[in-house]
Length: 236
Ligand code: ATP
Ligand code: MG
Image (cartoon, rainbow, N blue to C red; front, side, top):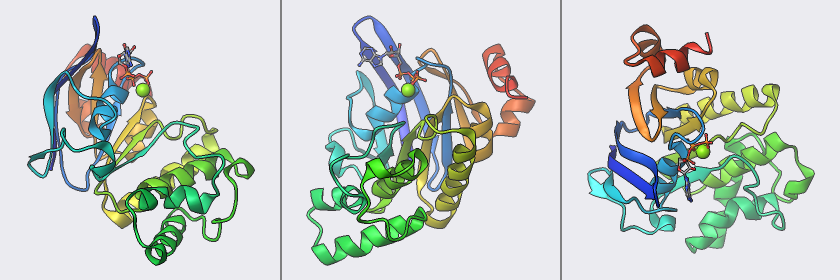
């Protein structure tokens, strides 16, 4: 469904990702797990179209999307923090991707309402982001990413700035949204517990390469390398 085909990305002498190869099924919840600097974000940015790979291809339903500009890729994205436009209301933040796509006004209002309902923020349209908690702001970011029904949603450590209780609450919401919408999710974290709780499969990154891909239990039961054993084992 979504094929990351031998992606390599270098910044001068730094190899950020090296021949990353991964096939993601439609509706799958795939998590990139790995230490700092292992190439997780770089892979997401290339998928989102924020960066071009040095080599390799990205295919969605068999078609390369590398030539498609970022805003036309039908891929939603949620970042770690500071993702909302502070001068826009919640409603206008969520409406933004629809305005970029020049959707009609009536459709915008209905879709914003539905997206806010999906993240359990019904009626928050007129609130300003600064007057909301970190968890609420991340829900707004999630609503904005989902408002135009993208088939693929990328999330780069969306919960790492939140405290444990909020994190667990929003993890729960993300799981529910995944089930309700069937959206294909690529999720980045370096929290093993979070990866195990959320994912269908986990891709373990190390130094720009994927060491192993599998379900949580598979990675636990038969780690392919010492690195995977150490990294996954940490959370036990
Ligand atoms: P973290 O968990 O800390 O977010 P990550 O796995 O997301 O790490 P990346 O951000 O993908 O890691 O970075 C991979 C490597 O590429 C790192 O060595 C990083 O320093 C380097 N890198 C990433 N972006 C750039 C850039 N714009 N210019 C130069 N080097 C970069
Ligand atoms: Mg990162």
